[in-house]
Amino acid sequence: MTKKQKKVLIRIIVSAVLILIIRRLNIADPVLEFVLFMIPYLVIGYDILKRAFKGIIKKQVFDENFLMAVATVGAICLGDYSEGVAVMLFYQIGELFQSVAIGKSRKSISELMDIRPDYANIEDEDGNLIKVDPDEVETGSVILVSPGEKIPIDGIITEGETTLDTSALTGESIPRKAEAGDEVISGCISLSGLIRIRTTREFSESTVSKILELVENASSRKSRSENFISKFARVYTPAVCYGALTLAVIPPVILLIAGRQPLWGSWVMRALTFLVISCPCALVISIPLTFFAGIGGAGKAGVLVKGSNYLEALSKAKYVVFDKTGTMTEGVFRVNDVVTADGAPFSGEEMLKAAAYAECYSSHPISKSLKDAYGKEIAAERVSDVEEISGHGVTALVSGRKVAVGNDKLMEKLSLTVPKEEVIGTTVYVAIDGKYAGFIVISDRIKKSAKKAIADLKKIGIKKTVMLTGDIKQVADSTAMELGIDEVYSELLPSDKVSKVEELLSSINGKEKLVFVGDGINDAPVLTRADIGIAMGALGSDAAIEAADVVLMDDDPEKIAKAIRISKKCMRIVYENIYFAIGVKAICLVLGAFGAAGMWAAIFADVGVMVIAVLNAIRALSVKNM
Image (cartoon, helix red, strand yellow):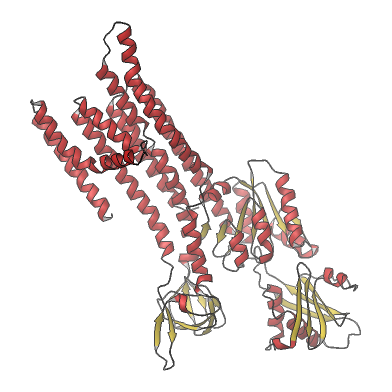
């Protein structure tokens, strides 16, 4: 508990004890009884009265503080001192429950926010370690991370090895080994060894900064349910205030006109009971709290949801469309074969060297595999006039020779005829000085969890899974069959993927949602176009993460089903609270208007319903077994 919460708890205990003592005294003098009851009333309710008064001054009258102030002051004016004080006491108990629940949700978010590093270690000229602000470290600098310290900035290990705790980012509790040459991301904790890291980004562009930005901005994107409740409360609260005023005045006036006893006190008490019952706290508090808890719980599991609107949309997902490379496959390509064309005036090694040089400026996984297979240092100054043609490949001048590396579409663009090769893997064609030189076979491995991810999606009610890829039909069909994907479309350009997603969107029910899952820079337009875009956060490009609505921090496709289950649980809790709160209040309002429900029933309808709804909302934090 915070200091503020402890103070409220002490006030609750003191007031409750004072009420019990005063009631046991059986005081006959009404003035003395009033004075004594005002002590616990002011102890427990002074802050509510203060906020209600400020609201009136600012012309923001209709809120729960105003309702509580009017109801309790009215009950005291009618001589029901103990009930007036009890209403305020139980309301504060409910507020304390709410505060503790929100604190628990915020703790979940703050644990995620704790990944921000406080400093980075750099060496001075004498070899001494200096702690500097991560913002001051330039790209390409070498930083040192000791055991137990957070990695402050993304980079590549140049020396040493360690085990990394990635649980704050990915939700994965098992540490993983990292050694020289491995890429590491900020926010992870080095557990075992001293490592040197050459930074590849500035701190502001590092993974940890982007995660914190996503989490901080998540609350600004409200769901339809939250917006409905906000609008509902703005209309509902003044409506019930006017309704209570009507209940207090109109029936007595009618009775007076009819020549009967008006019973002002009885009708005013009904109106005050009506006010207490009508307080919309349960809805106004529990619905945002449920989404807040759901986003926090998902974050701890390694699923970053950028707003409650996306969490709500995800619960309606019925179609999931995947990119292939880096999403369902590891995105780690390896050169399996190098085949030169008949009569080519150079060896396979020379062709591979030309391809690696032409691709030297590209960060695409296929480009990386070509450079890895070449295995020698590349003199980039020998490369010029590089042109990357989206969905085709790359052309460049390498030591004065025109080199083209890409798919069969690129060869067609260059008016070259290439043989259709029956190989398992991706075929990369090479042309040198305008002549077909040969092809390189590159293969990618399917992720271990990909097949189970598809099976899990079907278990939770996904109607159709689709894969879109720029790869050749044979490789695409083979991958889709192995994974159990329903439909596959191959040899697509980035613009073709957008068209295909639009085609799928036009064919589905209006309430159903389509999810696209991708990782590459060419997936950004499709991620934006889909109802919900999910990006792979660890290997995914910055553009894909920026365009996505949900980010999977460990690139595990199994987390897609988990994210959908979290969203469905969250929405189930939201609707449980809406139906429960409105249902109980509607019944009690009718009973209160007819005098069948007194102030104690009103307290349950307000505070009791709020406590139950808040406790129910906290369940959204728990995602361990999902």
